Length: 371
Image 1 (cartoon, rainbow, N blue to C red):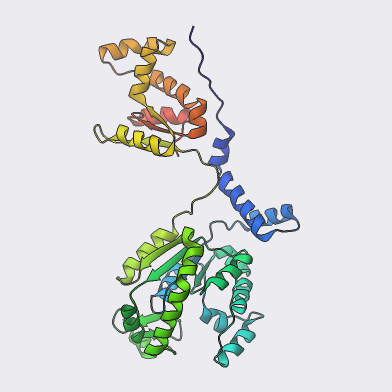
Image 2 (image 1 turned 180 degrees about the vertical axis):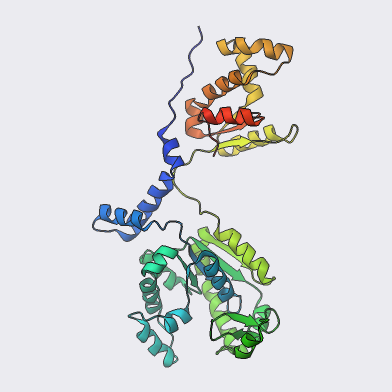
């Protein structure tokens, strides 16, 4: 007498996965550990009410003249997010610490890292940044600022790191022009505005001597390795020495990727393709690399016949005569196999079924949904 296969009811994980509960709980746990609120329940309720887990949190970093402002402004327009830079914090905001920072600037003194970090924290806690998300341009500048922001619970989801050779950057900085009205950056060679009115009002930005640019480049090269170390898991380096359209396209592709989550995930892969396209080989490689169960429909039918199961006896006449096995029999076999514990816990990769829309609909109606 054949031993019944151990079948398990569809896991509660399916419900949680459909509604995105795992990433949501993961995010809330992260926020709790970062902010350590006195009342965790109240904090979680407020977190859910804000509903801003999808809002962009992006840092655009890079040496002087690498195009940070152009990238940051374009991202702000694309996502309708808030751009925050040295210039916006000092000139456009009326924050509690703005006057203190301006006083340093007027005396030509370096603004302390703690003051910058506090200014940024104050600005990011405003409702527009919480709801719409933010693009931080040129911050953090060094390891100390990055650590201070982290201690405030400010950690970007994506860090865009622009790079180019020093000679290119020095050449670029000499042709840089600023629109005082919109704060947009143009260039005499690479990006000259077509509007004559805009052309007329462009200004040479202050602090643009070659010595000043070289000094700032040196400072950037000193702090870059430490910043790279802190943000390496969420960072992408993008070559700024190419047409701006290409730079922006690569930036957008990167910031639209979801960072890898530590939330539970059971892979359910479906491989489709014409005969001879290598589905079985890819399935075997995927199963080997990721430890998922390899389910090949043809193999499953052969095994059922060889093992003389009840289902196998029904399938046998079709396989012996080279007739196609009816969909309902194949589906019954598949559902049985995919409901076994190894498939539910480790995930699976399936090839050879469905081969047409009707089979796909049958698969879906049996609650077998690849993700």
